[in-house]
Image (cartoon, rainbow over the protein chains, first blue to last red):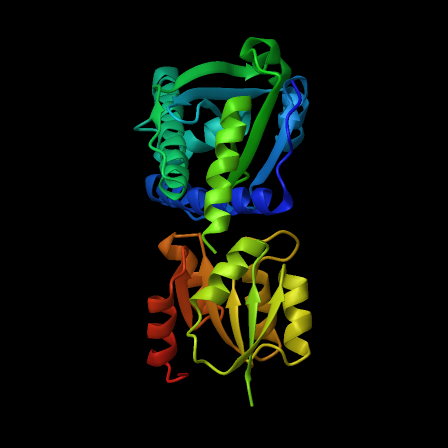
Length: 204
Length: 121
């Protein structure tokens, strides 16, 4: 199946609405951890699904050892979100929350689930508000711990030919901490998103 | 003489939204810049008595623009327009010399209120 790429205006609009949603997610993370979160420009593109693993590993600092938490979303638009933490990211999070709070590996997992839920919830709500879609989402689940990224992202399992790939990263100033939010949407959602973006672009 | 106003944002859509939110009867000459480098270049050419400045941009971001302006002896009224809604982002931008901070999405009411507050319109 061939897919029509987004026009420059559509891509720009999607990047900007993602930017606004990311700002809200970053603020929630800042509140949770009581730190300042550094935001960078989100990246938006349509890729063949076989290219998803390499595209994602490009953005991650240490793709050999990642921990990933998955959360699916559905409704008018559907897809997968993944929050990816490097090894250092996991231990930094535990440090920031305080070791009284995070003692066991179960506590650490719970913290990763909480952070994912907060980031994904804020990004989806932020996007949803702007394109007037309400998302449903599944509870977060750990996909892999300390695993090479290509073993985590097996594109055949998605059963799609193309994916809209949205990448956002959050880093904290004082530590090397970084985590990445990746959103993937299949063909019909790419088209649905195109309509939503055109609607926004037509409004001015 | 029309007041030189510079709108800085990496997103073309966002620049349009900002320009659309400016008061209609304001006598200005608008220039645009897509990142921090372009913003400083336009500033040095005298195109930015007032600057609407995004923070999150590739290359040189808005915080770096503010730092540079501060070092050079800020001669420009900067209003930050950002999706970064952390209270700390606003504090930092103002410490670096920004006069006001607008959280995206921007609208005419908030721009007008700020411009009136500072006696610009």
